[in-house]
Image 1 (tube, rainbow, N blue to C red):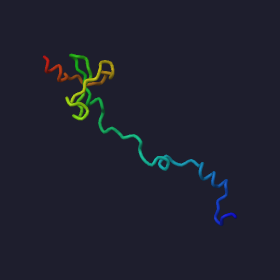
Image 2 (cartoon, rainbow, N blue to C red):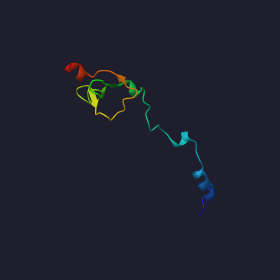
Image 3 (cartoon, one colour):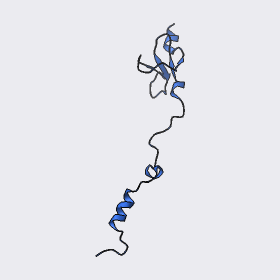
Image 4 (cartoon, rainbow, N blue to C red):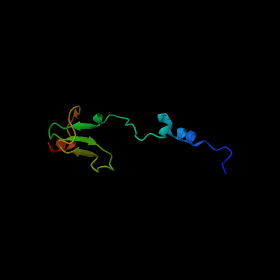
Length: 89
């Protein structure tokens, strides 16, 4: 009835519940590291007070995206006029 090389139930439970190092538990990295700082690509316009950035054409056909006021903090952003302010003045 019993198998020749069967493992005892206590040994089985100990083997299954022992703590393994993180490398064995996670086989892949869930999060991808951003290669650049976001603050380097996002600018603050002094004239209109909006935060804006260059984006790929498949995100927005104008290739620039203007964020609503108050959505993104302006601390640490480079001050640069957006193309809307440059073209209108």
